[in-house]
Image (cartoon, rainbow, N blue to C red; front, side, top):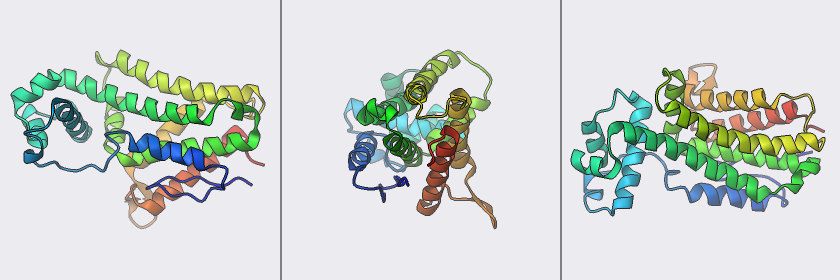
Amino acid sequence: MHTRTVVNDVKSDVDPAMPKQLLSINRLIDSDPYSKPESTVPASATKSAPPHESVERIIDAATQLFAEHGFHGVSTRQLSAATGLNVATIHHHVGSKRALYLRVIEALFEREERIIGGLIDDIGTDVAVDAKRFHEAVYGIIAGIVALARTHPARQRLYARRWLEADDELREREAELTLRIYRRIAAFLSEAQRAGTVRADVDLDNFLRSFDWMIMGYFTSGAFDWDTLRADPLDEARVEQFTAFLQDYAARMLGLEG
């Protein structure tokens, strides 16, 4: 029987064999300067901010605005109002609106790569041959990915918009960043597949893509509810339920049950 890892603020009921992994999830997400609840920052908090804090604030505000309105729906005046910085200062720190959009996309993917890659690094490579430890590791990685998505739901809305937009000059860079994350997870799963820990007949490419879409769908369309259809996807109990579903789905698809 395998224990379940669920990370929200962060809570879990896993056995004593897993504290290192849970600490890794906490540490990696807490160290992410953008993994904080979304909020509106008063203009007075930004006027005297150091340059690096101003850039972080611009990127954070731009992420939320682009997620809500899309690239063409955001004006520099909106960015100015959201950050408390004048238009000239924003341009000085991040360049044009298109350059800022690219920096937002790069920041999103680079943060995910750092956190997901950090989880895999902390787990180590020897778990591939140990079915029980690998099962627990997969549960932990899933909990970490959901926790990351929950800390900044604007990420998921922005991704959904990007996927629906026509190809543009950013698509090649976006593909490069996305595939770096996919390859890291695929290598982790492929090693276990070669070791016989993961089913030999599972299509890892489609598994990863469908898994990505499930997380995207949950955080953009809302949790399912029989009365209202769409419920708050950030509700703690619903996040725990969704995380448990993903963990069970992964276990069945990868052949980790037993």
